[in-house]
Image 1 (cartoon, protein in one colour):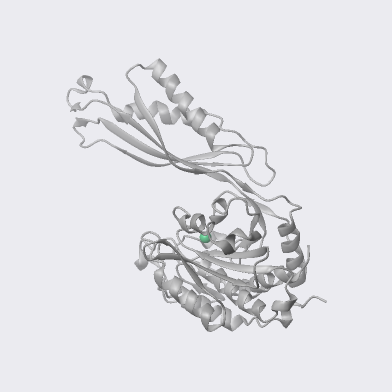
Image 2: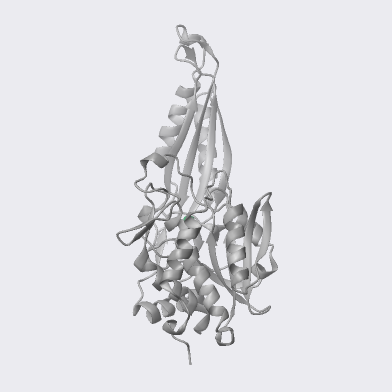
Length: 385
Ligand SMILES: [Zn+2]
């Protein structure tokens, strides 16, 4: 006989209060100051009678890992502790670090992405401790650092013995309680062109590095990087996110640098994107012998995909049925998460709140979505696939 989610000690007011407390502890990345929130979570777990291992990632930056039950294959409940920064606090209607509640929403930086969902996960995790003997698998909780920049926390977590025994898991990214089984890959590249400086009044004496960048960018826009034909995500996209070049208006610029953000579906690999850009630069150099252009990889990771009939998907849809009375069909998303660093572990994203408010001013989470999220997380290790 499976326990129903209503029999678990999961209390909405406690989730909200915990979420507010987490929002009140800034953990902006950059700079990546997750120390205080990590200590708060570790103490909170210990006060509830659960272990809390602090896994150092960098100085003053550590993951928090906890587990219920012994040494066997485990289900992972994972969330990140860092948030994006608040560039202009004055533009916010509510103090980004006060955890204020208004019109059914909890406001604040990280309320949605993802301190609200961390509060749901932590509450579910503690409730499971009380019904330990009913669990169909071990449960491991992981709170990471640095998800918003380079997923250093998730990469380091792969070394922890508790993470090595994880068979599958959930990351609590805000998805409005929709299961997400596909995440696009990303490839961040820098292209640099060099020229020869000269006085702006005699430009023919120099080589303009900005003008050399122009054909590179326009030809990139024309290239086909692959559609992948995946039903849940679109084809490859490219965003020219940064460009820098030149020193003064009256000087011919001798250098130009641009940063490109490629997002690609399953069926396309980062190597093929890199290969196409490399070939393009060779072609352009053959057309213009003076062209000096170089490519540099900032970082790349391939798409993450979990099969629609994987046990974690079956389990999650069952848990949604139990708690919500129905489930939505699994989706794909164009962004990457810690799942791309926890490679090899089948991971589905599901979390409370509307994703459109993430990384925005007046970030907020819909309070009514938090209790169902906590119950869904708690049901996962109580059900059988
Ligand atoms: Zn997030």
